[in-house]
Length: 325
Picture 1 (cartoon, rainbow, N blue to C red):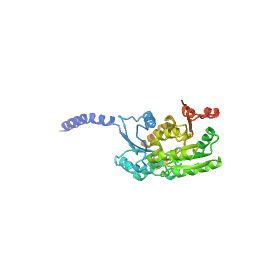
Picture 2: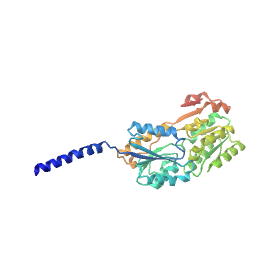
Picture 3: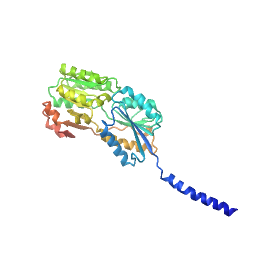
Picture 4: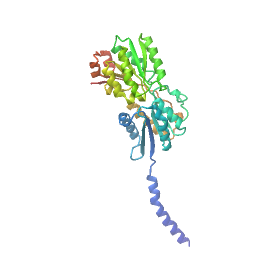
């Protein structure tokens, strides 16, 4: 009887062995949601950088990683529903760009970790830079703080500049502080500043027409989902109106814009992978400090400068991180 029981147990062990081995080779498949203002095709450079960063840490789509992308297509009012949709998919983590997207993700979930890139002051979303608290961490792009620098660059390009305008979507919570910063910096530099508030794509053409009629000497373009979505139209209208413009990201200059001074967004998205990895390995978002960029890049489109009749100062050319021919 004992011999028979041992034999039965022995066969049971052999039967289970392949199953145990099979279970050991199964790896968790991580699911990341990405909540953005623009379609994935328009966001390709940043998404490629994110994938490269994740791949370098062992997360590969089609193997142990799934990325679910949702775009508001430049309409911030869509973010709450899109965020709720991502939460319902039971994801392991959500990545957002822009203050409206981050706020919507925060309202949609208190448990799924969120990594954000926020254009405005992140303290409007988290407790502090050092200890964000809750389920959100990420980086700040310092877009508001860079406003004064962009105005200084425009003044270098257009020494006779007297009037500037900020084209921004004032419905974005990050926009009013940027407008205040614009007014303050303009006053210090002896310039007159005006606001071109754009709330929809229909406002963009009217805003550029107004800038031309009112002899605006240069434009600042705010960082917002609407301006991202319609960047090519904004760049083309500024060129047609012969108005020099400073932009909040390199992608605008690659599309034909004159100049950008901002963080390198692909590098930022590559950096996101480190946050993802730490969270997947057990770190809590509340304990991961909000990262502040140490370097900003100056990008100039040489062809656009020539078309506008702007002689680029040698001092500016030397400082540029990239010159686009």
